[in-house]
Length: 555
Image (tube, rainbow, N blue to C red):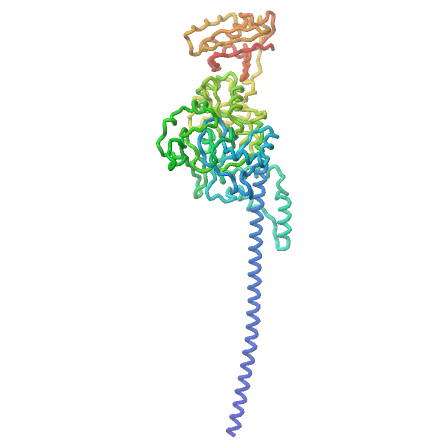
């Protein structure tokens, strides 16, 4: 009996063992299937994440290519040409060291090898076809610059959507590469936005930059000769973002030294902290009247950083510009110039090929210097225009009254300035060279004939002519009438009025007997005088020049 019971227990134990083993195998199988499912899910999730990352990276690359393409399109409109052979990239540019030269305006000197490069690549012909000089963009590169850096360009890049999926990503990329990324950018507002983004990006790429022309290709290899005005433009302080705040950046500068005065171990340049030489005391007027392009060692500071030089073949032709006289120009008698137009034309022809917004251009007349700031140019999309072989309408801008610096300027300005319809509030008035700068009102109650004019003025005798010794407030008035008749006389502007000029014209026979009504005018700027309106106005209030020509004009 005991043997049989033991056999039954053994049988039961074996059954339990087999049952447990079977359950274990089932559990292991279920666990394996679950692990496999989990692994599959994790693998699928990982693949989806990688695909999303790949699509995001591809979209980011397409956005970057998009803004790069648009930026390069703006560069192409200017005809930007790299001066080095090989890969045409933004790092493949001609880099030169600055030195100082004599000269006015924007005329620089460059190495002879650059002229050879331009000729070999047939780039001179492009400028010749437009009857334009050779233009260059000179810029001081910002260290660590990465495209894009400007807020506008980054915003355009962020907002651009391509709708990439795994199925259409290649098609979208190919389509936009073929179309040049401009399928939706024909709208004028978008074009304006791109122009603003382009200018803002340039301000991040360069610490400062300016457009200039060349006077000659005689500079030593590796150097670029800068006249005073270009060096000053490149050395201007510029605002930049620093830790979220705007800060002013000062461009490092240096003085150049004549290599003949140095030993070979001293090198070509010294820092601006060195002692100034006697040549630095040379006056600016002397500096600008030396032969342009010749070295001007140590006479003024130039950027110590290297200059990137880019050639461009399509700088926009200027249509309009606004010039603002500086305080010194007004104090030197800018508003007393008889022919502002001729003075500006002569200065531009001799010294400049282009105008940059912010430039200070210099005009000379009879030994006096007049500085005018370029406030605006049209077209404005690159903030610079060519002023060669083109008709440019010139506006003389109002004088700023900021900080009370010019609080008395209104009293100093002549009556020829009258506020135009688009004048800015808070500023003194300006005018166009082509404007009629009379008081802007229609004449009222004009006299009907020369006899009535004579009757109107004969009651008041002309004050005596001032003595030869008197210089202050004396104006030499010349009147040109019909048939070439002329008369001239010196007037004391502090005691004489406009009616005395009318009476002088009548008494000297400049007006033909029996002539009808007439008025007197001056030119450049044009001013119109009527007896009834202006007769009692003092000559002093018009701030006339030392000599004035009046022309009799019939009504």
